[in-house]
Amino acid sequence: MVKKKTCIFISGKGSNLKNLIYHSRDNSFPIKVSLVICNNRRAYGIAYAKKYKIPYILINTKLNNYENKILFNLKKYKISFICLAGYMKIISEKIIKNFKGKIINIHPSLLPKFKGLNTFARILKNNESKTGCTVHYVSEKLDSGNMIIQKKFFIGSKDNEKDLKFKTQKLEYRAFPEAIIKIFRNY
Ligand code: GRF
Image 1 (cartoon, protein in one colour):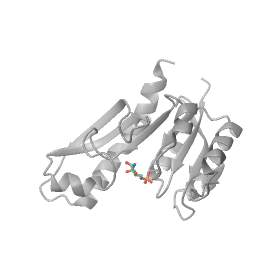
Image 2 (cartoon, rainbow, N blue to C red):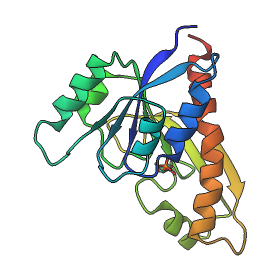
Image 3 (tube, rainbow, N blue to C red):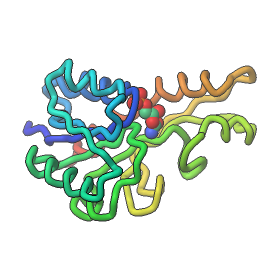
Image 4 (spheres, rainbow, N blue to C red):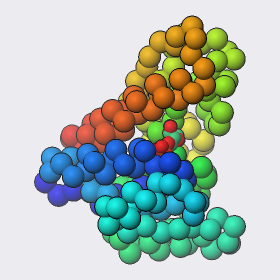
């Protein structure tokens, strides 16, 4: 099987990046993590790129031409698939057009509920009985592309934001790889 050369976009901790690197070392997993793009030079996730000798590019989103730098590197590394894993910037239309149907994102709620930021606080405030995570295709509209996989759990009566984050991320580490396998199963 020829693995898809994949770029993971991150901004922070990078625990999903670490998990995808771990899975991609399996021969039967459809992707190879070939590039990491990060918009935050203090992101802990960069350590995983270094540790596993994966090329990484730091992007300064304050510069006008940063989108071109992203596109240039995606081409340079022959990237054909993109995973957004905690990337805290909106992906531009230009990139979406160049990679139509080839960009996926993981979001910490049961979309279409709780799009955007501060999900856990809003979920608790709304007295939801369950929550979870969603892997979906990226479209021009924020957190609105077609859903690939969703995983849920019931919220405990004493759960706080930290508990929700912990439980959600535990599910994310299963959902992201499963979504990727699902996408490429029929290729
Ligand atoms: C994840 O929980 C994901 O749902 C959200 O950002 C978080 C990133 O976490 N989009 P990490 O950087 O992968 O640890």
